Length: 377
Image (cartoon, rainbow, N blue to C red; front, side, top):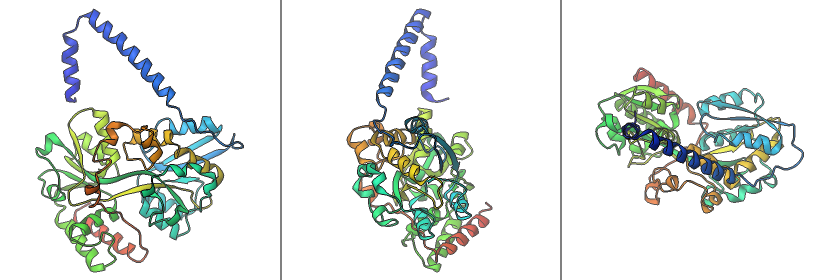
């Protein structure tokens, strides 16, 4: 039980029945006004005509969209949305490579988006159908993986850092080496490019190195520093942390901040290690052979609406690339002021992203397989 829950129980034990009744009525009033405020925060986005009765199929990561995002879109456009989720980028990419089974929207990471563009797996976008692209912050426009944003638009921004149980760790974790030297159970993440990029960065190499020798050295570095790894998680490390199966986990920022928000306690901490870490945007794209590309572009425009984008970021606790949502103060102030979510410039200076390269990709895959074998994973 979280610390605040125990305090509340002790508080209620001291109240009379009359005081409890007053508190209950006050809570109802507060909830009523809170619900009213939320109702007033509805998007003003209007769906173009001609789509009623159609169907959209979305393929996204789990826990990566607000509760109201899909239902509101269905109501505004009079359409039906089929919403499927995947645990890793690799699962999504493998499925699309085999032939699009009917998805209209996918949400790859920037690196995977680059691969999909190079392999002809994404459709070019008609930006005349996406006027809300103007809401995107300039820093996320014309990225190196998709110059001129021909195929993608940014969705959410975040990174992979270190999350830990403060009570079990017994000390502040600030460095990758704090993780490697920890004498307790640790979980890494099943993301070979990011894990090897972290090692390359710590070794002083380009996180996107194409050198076989450097990639091999990164492999050996992970093996040497993986003695406390009890599992390599499939993007569910936050659940392992909550269940107490590990004390430290490498996980994406939003997943951990959702845990922190749900707990409303001081037990869990998320940090960006001082040496730097992976930080990038996930994007929206239309996979090749999408059954309803026109409706997919309408959906993308809807997602880029300031209120809709704010709702998603407020729910996922990932940073928003939607400058209009930030300027209109639709993003939670608590989120905006959190340096782990919106890092200051000096911290961002140590961040890196990953890009895919067809020639070196097999080297990374083989290296990661060897890491897992050596670690018994």
